[in-house]
Image (cartoon, rainbow, N blue to C red):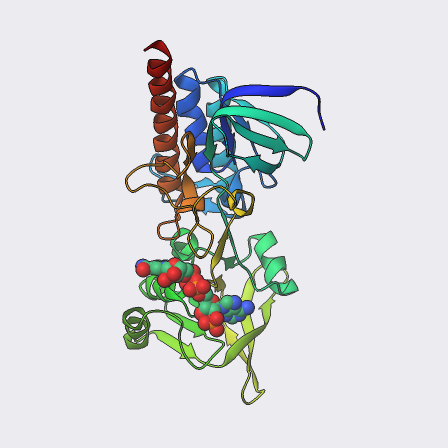
Length: 320
Ligand code: NDP
């Protein structure tokens, strides 16, 4: 353990659009924010190719480039951006304690959590290969569906997300094949029915992904297996969408913060406040519904403003 405890006004954990936007606002409000980037600097967007739906980029921008720009903007106003992984927290007192890389202890007056969520993938080597290559595997239909206009795609999953994304894709693509591993949907009836009624969505029940096929650069199809008949089949497709859920990156907070049953942090409605005074949340760590860069950025701004107001109210208490 380090002997010296660092004291900061505002500690931001996570470096996606939520964390960087919180940093821009906090730095401009003289809160001298310190931001820890975590394992995946830039967050989920660094695994996306082209971002075309973030206002202000009429020509689009790649996810990694956009994150560099947000980082530069946060640095320009004095954010102290550091490599490091927050491994433990203690939010039991009025000063919030945070440990980085198990060793460095930091005491923060305010904490903004922007640790995001991670899309779950099947874990097949072929899926991971085309994901890394940016060759046609995606976990976000709203982000990437546009690139598959008038093409044939496959989507795996049977929850509300998969239904919503399949329906979204059906409006852009020639054909959407949906792979459901059981003989029924997990999604709500209304969502499942909407998918069933959509003409260009074909649903294959009892069907699992065996391999994502490709030419070494891009996806060309998907080999699937019927788990009842053990029959294999190849489906031509240029895009493979995975919609089997997300996991919020909130494990280290579970002893102190209220989480929902999936692990998303529960924020007070209409604000970024958590159940602990001085601890705020922004981005996908608290959002299983919208999950967009622009909504994450918006809640990052809210968190910085809420943190600033919290500090101001404490100053008033001290003066009184
Ligand atoms: P869910 O956990 O609800 O569903 C995940 C789906 O993926 C399940 O159907 C599951 O299958 C399937 N799955 C998991 N692992 C695999 C695998 N290895 N191979 C094949 N299929 C797999 O996640 P969602 O993201 O859909 O939803 C999360 C929460 O967000 C839910 O509460 C949902 O209601 C909510 N939501 C609400 C929306 C809305 O109201 N507009 C939109 C989107 C989400 P199985 O069923 O066999 O376990």
